Amino acid sequence: MTTPACFRSACVTGAVALMVAACAARDGPAAPGYATILTAPASAAPSHPVRPAGAAPLEVDLANPDADTTRDAMALDRRLRAEGDPDYVGMRIVRDPAPRYAFQFSRDATSRLSHVTQDARFLAIDGGLPRDELQPLFDVWWARFAPHRIAGAGAVMEFDGVVQIQLTIDQAQFETLSAAQGWSIPERVQLLYAPRANPHAADPGLASQVRVFPREDRLPAAVLQAALSGRLILRDGCFRLQDHGDGGEPLVLFGRDVELRRDAEGYLVVIDPHGRQARVGERIVWSGPRGVIDDAAGVLALRAACGSEPIVAVGEPESAVRFGARRAG
Image (cartoon, rainbow, N blue to C red; front, side, top):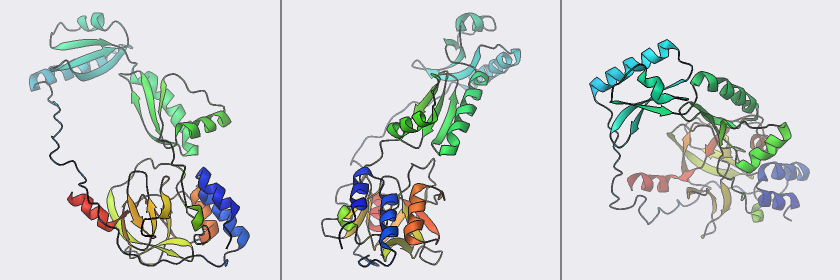
């Protein structure tokens, strides 16, 4: 069977899911040659130690000021808030190098603190903005990003005078979206971009065997850390799960940066840039459960190519053998 041109171009751009789905739809669901792989020898455990042998523990002084100082500092913080100074930002612990309580004002900190205390245990710091000034800015941009599924986490950083939003897409993807939406990001909105998306998806030589290689189009905002397991299989060109505890053979959705290729022994393998990998046909472990967004590109491609059955998002799966070796390392 000739490799469809759209599969080849999809591998170059990384947008394999939609492009392969288009090929499947054009050629028809009964096109010959799609593979079925129900079992494979387990991946070899890594031969090198997972953790550096004899690595010294990281020593960090996390000590706080003593109980009496803490009590007095909290009382002073309550007083400053009650007095309603519009420039009062808040109290925090600094280490210079011993731990001390610092009281921060957006301006004239030394003068303002001296009006309420001469206690040498406490430090005055200029900078930042009160939370009440920053929260509306955070709320506006969080709500603006939410429909596009690009806001993963965020915080009001009053001591730094900014709001911070962690994005689920990389900088290039954001700039494209921002230009299309006509956004102008304020100086006090600090964006933390996701790492650049992996441009590699599926080996184009597998186009005649795999209907679709569906991947998430964004990094997840958060990932639950339960170790879930099952057997990753390929049936008639569609990735599915067996032996996962809930019965049936749900369809599989992979993480944004997972690749599909053959390993050195010729077995079909999924691998991510961080080295997690698993052969198609072996038991896998993944962190979850993870949500599935019905109108996401990878999900729509999977539905178009493989049907309407339940979907399990396995993110970046790892061979159960390799997972066990890593845990024991």
